[in-house]
Image (cartoon, rainbow, N blue to C red; front, side):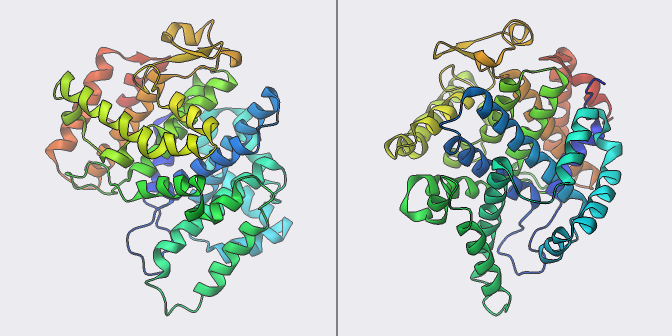
Length: 415
């Protein structure tokens, strides 16, 4: 069965922007599911690189795929069981029969929307959810990343909930479970955020939840840069499945989506009309982003012994070719630009480490389109939102198929 991405699936992925977290605690800001998932998968990527250094290429690619798929399965599962508090869920998980009953119900709820992803995806998710134990390296990495991201949220609300009797027990649980995972390379550094560059980088990425997109336009929900990056990553993975991308290309597309707005840590979410006001302004902003990215992120990582992490970030962000939205391959250690046709044909090979810049741009545009469309549907009337929808529609009316994705036809489903 071929994979066909539908509107309902894109909206399902976006729906995590509505899901409140820590809803029974006083919060300094709204904490939502997509932000946590974005932070979790960034940390999972860091742990993936650190714990696969001695693996051969085939094992490393298999591990990367398992981590991405597991992260997506966990997220879709979470979208359905949103109202079950973690302590209750963990008790259910301890009883294998009860957990299977709950998981079968979750799969029944998800089936109409995820069926277009094909039988392999459905079967993979079923097998993943039927095994409640966090065994295997991929699951342990995801569990550590989940605990770190949730603990980071807890630290934000800890100081304003001092009268809450649950706080001591909650924090002790986070620390204890993370300490039990310290055999994973990188977990100790994450627990000691202030003492090393890896922990500081992971914490820095979490700060992207503070930056709201469309900051000059009221919206419901108000998506953050961190949540947006996660949504774009998942869209990129699904579209990679649709166009038959090789394993390396699928993973590169996911992680490129996950980091594509990382420079906005340093320059804020500069809106498209400002970036596109002229070539000169666009180039100026890009140059500033690149300089600051090197100073604040890449150089500290390299100086701190994490050159491999910095090098992959440079590739995902397209620094060697001037844009994350350009298609690239890596041949004999040298990054080269490629065409859409080449990526779909002779360059669709794991050995060439291909990355779909244009497909990433499609995912980014669709995420922005759904943000604007959802806000308008929720009663927010804004000229900027209407203009954004029109601009995106016009772009893909002129070029209805990008990187093998029927974008114009997909947008027509929203009319």
